[in-house]
Image 1 (cartoon, rainbow, N blue to C red):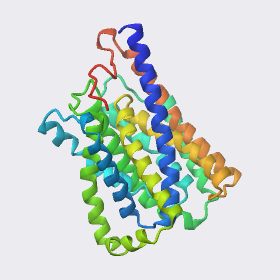
Image 2 (image 1 turned 90 degrees about the vertical axis):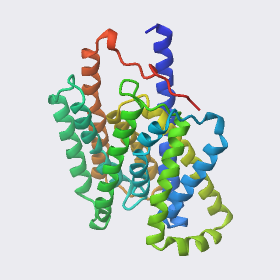
Image 3 (image 1 turned 135 degrees about the horizontal axis):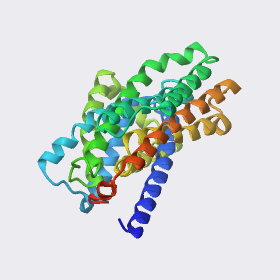
Image 4 (image 1 turned 30 degrees about the vertical axis):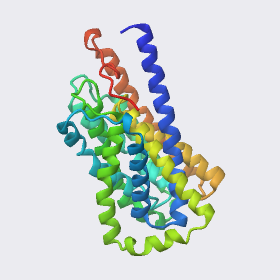
Length: 322
């Protein structure tokens, strides 16, 4: 690979990661605020997904689907994507969500290790996992019992998140028979098909009867907040696909957890919706750092075992970009 090609790949990866971090942090914050003025999780998520579909349809020239087979393959992602979005609504404190989700890279790493003969468990991986568990225990030591009621839902969200990342990476990676679909096309399929389970959930929870009246009663400021959350949803939908096409599922989950550390600081220092004790803050930080450290041996072993003639290039088979 030429020096210029390598530089372009680096720039694209940095740009995609930066864009995803910005959109991800914005999505967490806007959802947390939007759900306080419009407490209908399924309907709010459905509105965000419907808005994303409309925006992507309006950008018709950027959409590309190579074949029906590719579309059907990618449609497997949609249910997991919808489940991830629905169960990501704040059910506990933001920091509790972050700590539980910090465990998710372990499962993705095990799955990706099974597909590669060059990845081996070593002492640093075990130490990283130990650090993550230690941080979680330190955080929950002073946590009030009422904040633990959301742990079950957060665990479900973690399962959806891991499955979504693994499926997307498998179908986007240039060395794993990727789908011939543009990034905007992938995002459109995710949101269009993901709407269906959200609407079903809204029906069975009774939101379809009460949400319209609540939506009409919103003030101008609250309406603006809802619109902002929908705009951010478009950004996160696209940058999620873009970033996932360039980095592994394990790295993607670690990236998600790392940028959520920014939300801990924002929540505790600016929004002040979570009052953290020193041990809680230390536990959250330790857990996130442990998750980030988990990727280090993975990356090094790939570099050490990678042969020049089979070197992986994230843009080796570039999808049609928006």
